[in-house]
Image (tube, rainbow, N blue to C red):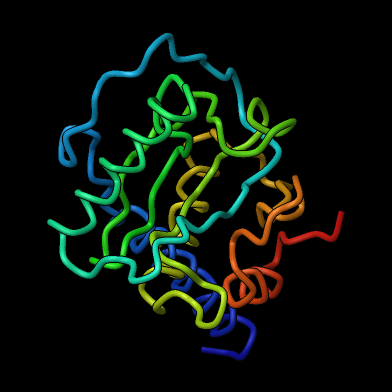
Amino acid sequence: MNTSTAIKFVAVLSLCCLALSVNALQIEPRSSWGAVAARSPSRISGPVDYVIIHHSDNPNGCSTSDQCKRMIKNIQSDHKGRRNFSDIGYNFIIAGDGKVYEGRGFGLQGSHAPNYNRKSIGIVFIGNFERSAPSAQMLQNAKDLIELAKQRGHLKDNYTLFGHRQTKATSCPGDALYNEIKTWPHWRQN
């Protein structure tokens, strides 16, 4: 095998491995965490332009499925109750138990970033990430979720990645997580 053929082979193998890892991403359905039905959800047609990253600002985060599900349920209760949202504000939740949970899911408008809700996917990391970044597993889950959104046609290939603080005056998603996502390929300064 010559060098050119070997390089092409390695490139194809790498793409196949990436596709396998993304296809292996398991998203826990709303029913797994006991979601209450949304009030009048709004659909989004076609792929969106943005991914907005948040943190839940829970000081200790969660590490077991029971803890994570309880926190997600509490976030939904707060959003539907105190904030009067129609549902949990985020499309997806990245949790410390190594799982990705469906919030509103793909194709539904979130309530997570004013002026961007109709054109974005909102992803929240459970925990406070001011001083330390999420685990490598959590970060990889977010990257795989973003890739899955592109593959399924919910996110444009040339999307822009923002931290929540780029959409309004807030410290979210925390300094450590914000500094991490600034190294990702689609992050842009606004």
